[in-house]
Every structure is written in structure tokens, then in C-alpha cells.
Length: 287
Image (cartoon, rainbow, N blue to C red; front, side):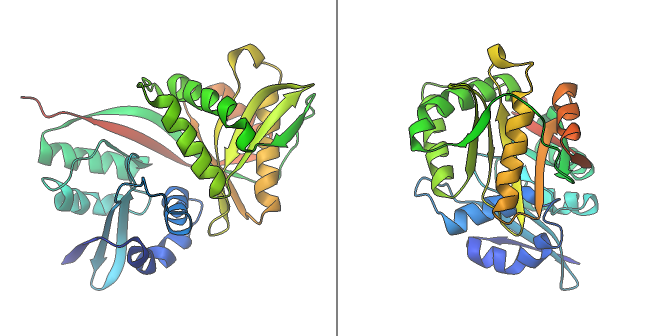
């Protein structure tokens, strides 16, 4: 019989699950980066995480976590254990959504909807890529590591990216929240690279500080007026080089499968597909 445990202490949770996640730092890029940031650079504004483990005959077989405001991530929940996790959470917590490998996500969505009556809508079909041999494109300009002086610019770009790529409707405090997240990421050692053509900033990519030998790139954003010149590919390659220089053995990123341009660009500079993923959002229970 499976034993499901909810945890209140992130360090304790990581002590139980770190080896489990670190067996595949590429697949588990999201939980590894989330836990590393919270343990190494805690933010007083962080909401408490949702943490769960599943043991079968004493063996850890699944681990799920949610670090608000993000969805529940299921890279550590094989599809066969998705129903068990849904059973344990339904009626106890509210979830805005879920992400992870497609098979696990779809199994969880079916189980969650059956138990809660909530609907579910696919928000984004994604693909996880890992960098092989980096191919640096020849593009006019150069990359520069961003600093606190660039937060105002990156705040605007981050908000624009969220609207365009993720369908986010910015609230009244969207700019303030973006600036807070950017400053916290910089303090945590993230690398933000801005591509300049002459003296004009034209594109941006970010990567988290390596954790468990892994660094994930994102977001990558080029304002519409600067597209079509290869700046996005160039700044992504610069960001990947930054991550490797800081010890990342595994450089990864997620793409939106609805955007064939970005998928082809990343493959041209050396990224190779690993697994298809999905993000679903849950809709309120019908009254």
C-alpha cells in the first residue's frame, strides 16, 4: 500500500527527495531550480510551498511540489502514481494548474477533475530541450551581462513576454511584481544577458544559476521591432555559454510547440528534444 506524506519543511523534503530528483537533473529541471532558489536565497515574500512524497513498500516512487504562484509540477510523478497524488490533494488544497511531462499531467488532470468537478484547459503544449554542441550564430552585436541598472528595461520586457507568450493579463501591480522577481533572481545568481546592436538593446535571455549541474534558460524575448535579425538565437547562445562557464553540465529550456520559429531556432544552435510537456489550468467547479 502506498504511503503518501505531506511535508511542511522544504529542507526536510529535499533531504528525502534530492537524490530522487538528481538522478535526472534535465527531466527534473523545474523542481531542482525551485528548491535551490528557495533554500539558497529565501525571499520573505515567498508563500509556503506544497510538498508531497509517495512511498511504495518503503521506496520513494513519486514526489510533487508547488511553489506559489506557479502550478503543481509533476516531473517527479510517473503517470501510474498521478491518481494517488490527486487522491491525497483533492478536497485539501486548491490548485491553479499543473505542469510536467505530458503523460503524467494528462493522467493527473483526469483524476483531479473526477475528484473535484473542476474543468481543465490546456494552457500550453511544450517541449523540453537539452543543449548538445553549442553552435554560436554570427549575428551583429554583442551580449552584456545585465545588472541592477537594467531592471527597468527588463521589467517592461518581462511583462511584454508574459502577455505575448503566456497570455497573461497584467494586473495593476504587474510591473512592480516583475521588478521584484527580477531583482530576486539577480540576487540568487541568475544570469541575464542582453544583446546590443550598436548601443541599442534588442534582445534578452536569462538562465538560473546552476543547481545540481543544471541551468535552465528562460525567458527569451525580442521586442517585435527587432525580430528577424537573429538576435534571439544570439542571446540564447550567449546565455548558454554563460551557464556552461559557471559549471552547468546540463543546459535546458522549454519551448512553446505552437511557435515553430523558436523551436527551429533553438535546434539550430544545438538544442535537442528530450520530452514533450504540458501545462493545464483548472477552471472553477460549475455552480
